[in-house]
Image (cartoon, rainbow, N blue to C red; front, side, top):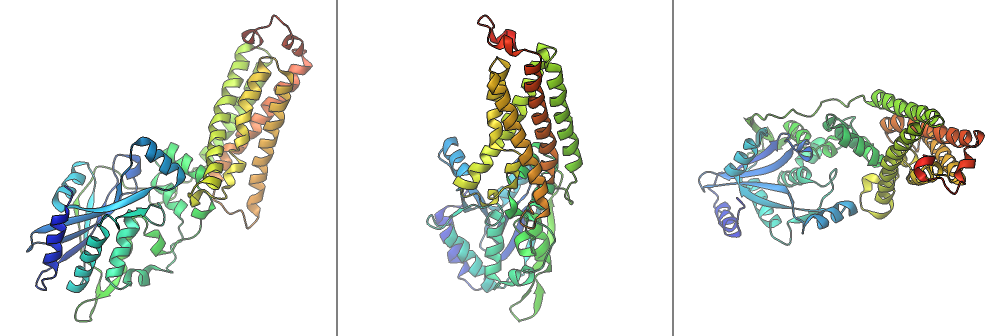
Length: 421
């Protein structure tokens, strides 16, 4: 249940009474069933048993005027999220009912700090202040909670975590969290550029709920008497969820991508050799060419658009454009035209495929240079052998069709597209 304005005003009235004992907790929710819930979630709980209120503040709210508006904002990289306060027990009951784990870390805040924090979130919930431009890595529902708590304790979290290297990157955390969701894992490794590959300190790493939960355990603050005390006063697991926690290590997947890439590349070569003997071979080759070219070509077009026309900074300067090149979108059309009798289209398809394969090889060779440090071994292992196989297949097909004299059939006025295929 959403906390209304009248309730917030009552809360504000309550906190000005010095005798009130505030309880401030960091709430961490475990993974859920949906893909976007695999990373977990963070919220802030403010409770006063004497005043009779218990509010959980959530910075992960999103509103859109229909699916078109949602898709448009997502493509542009201009998602607006907001925050709001909800009834605490009902919120916890909802997450528990969905099978989510819940941890509560009660924080060692002085009464004055608790009052300042509650005043801040009440101000933040005003319509003019509640919205923000969402950035998954640097400004999300977890970093907003981190920043609010850090402000209330005079920057203690920042002092304890900034500059403390972790040896991890944004990409590392994305890969290990989505290790079990191979399609999304592959898609994100393709579209994420080099900006997600720099090493993080503990402050930056706290963009994830479980990392913030871990790092606040080592933060020290001062109580009202000036004594140093842990920020986390107590910690308890409220519910144990039914969904597996994210992997703790980055998966080693490139050998499997290499096997898949070599297999598809070999199938392309085999289909091209088969195509010179039977119509079904030509159909098989066309299906493989279209499948890979459209999938990788559309992916390349999305990456290029994300770089030049959106605010998705994580997509800028993406080296995977050399592996999943938008030029691939030309190949299905040229191949089809070649199969139904257009001689120049066969040669053109082969030349375009050779250029694409050469760019893939260049993408691999550039890894020896300091400026090309994007972690994209998985995508190179998959795409390079397929692009090489594509180039060999289309070149072989174009040459063999000319050598066997099949071009004579191309100009026959009675030949149908199906017969030529």
